[in-house]
Image (cartoon, rainbow, N blue to C red; front, side):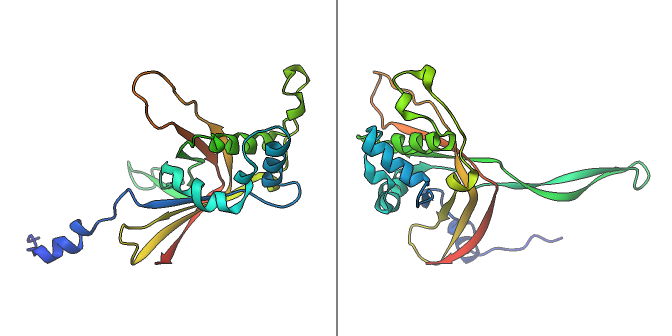
Length: 213
C-alpha cells in the first residue's frame, strides 16, 4: 500500500486539533429530602458543628465543589470473555459475553480554608453507616446501622469540553455512586502546598452522551 501524502491542513484538523486534558467539570449532588444525605449534613452541621450547613445547599455544589475538583479520570469498560479452545486446529479464541465497568473512580479536590469539603464527604460517609454522632465522646458506645442504598447513592457527572467552550462536549454520567473512601492527606513543614483531598467513589455503571455547547 502506498503512503498517502498529507497536507498541513490535514495535520491541523487532526493532530493539532486534539482534545486537551485540562478542561472539565465535575458535578456531584447527593440526594435531598427527608431522611436524605443532605438533610443529615444539615443536622450534623447544626447540632455537632461538622462543617457549615451551606455545604448541603445547591449553591455549594454548583460553585465551590465543581471548581475545587482538579483531577479525575474518564472511566473505562471492558468485556468479560469465554475462552474457546480448539475451535479450529491448534487455535484458541476468546468471545465476549458481558460488558463490565470499572468499579470505582477517584476525584481529587482542593481543600478550602474552612475544611468544608472534608466535612462534606465525612458526613456523607457517616450517613451511609448511620454513625451515632452523639456517642463521639465515647467510642465504645458508638453504634452503626447501614442505610439503604437508595438513600445515599447519587449521580456524578463529568463534562469534558475544550477551552473555547464551543462545539461538542462529552458527558459521562456515573449511576448509583457514593463515596467509598477518603484517602489520607499528607501534611508537613517542608514547602507549603495546596491541601488536596482524594475521594474514591463506587458506582454501578456509566453512560456517555453528547452536549452541544
